Image (cartoon, rainbow, N blue to C red; front, top):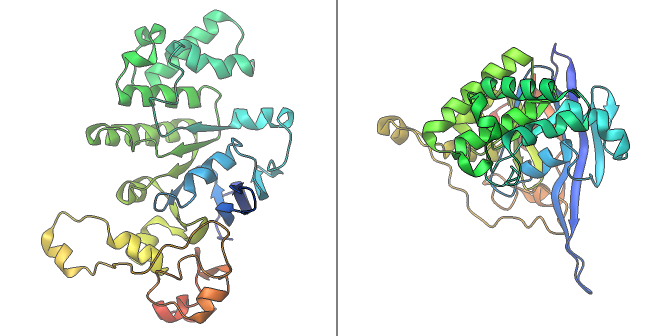
Length: 334
């Protein structure tokens, strides 16, 4: 995998999640995540990007064990939690938390803010005294920019941005090491998004957090991420250091994805070459051998349609899955 001086916190190897959509006499398997590999190092933010339906949210839910993987390993701090029982997951759940995309659906409308944030604290018996729990809730509310008097209110009394702050406070309550943030700002007003991102960065420094940041806003991902993984139809297409990927994308899909980012300066926009993809999107149901991107790739040859490309390191700290990556980019074969 990628060379890095930091210590790995999470290693994902050959991770798969297939959903059985079969009906009577018609076998259908949806390969939502189909054999991906990546590492997240302690203290970093790993951005995971791709179009809607590429499997990035499913990947996040697999990592926090909301879904049971079909195959593969989820190695957290040296222990593979992919196939363990719910009882064995208890210590893992204290160390890995999730911030959900929809701040309206992810909070229980019948619970007060105190009850929402304190639920995990009570379940894991981190604190037992009512006074200690209330003090911890107040502390967390202040950390995310809310007030103590908000503790007794219900979710419907807050704006979307405030609800997401409550969700972040809930994720912090167990002192986790890894937080999976599933598009945490996509449902928020643009004016609020930057505030939440800045707060997440401040919390990361204060609590030495590691993030898996899932998003489709490519500009925001570059701002917050140390490294980036690009997914397409359940497969990982490219991984690299954030600035390297944005300044010199290697995979044809990454090139097309980044070319679609809006640029405010029309003169710069005119000089840029927008990559317009042709062809049909491959179905993730009952997938056939070959590159998932081959039907839309302008460089595809017969091999691309028949042989699945290896996900390999083509440059230092740069991995891609493409048979023709050296030819397309003029790279020297390793």
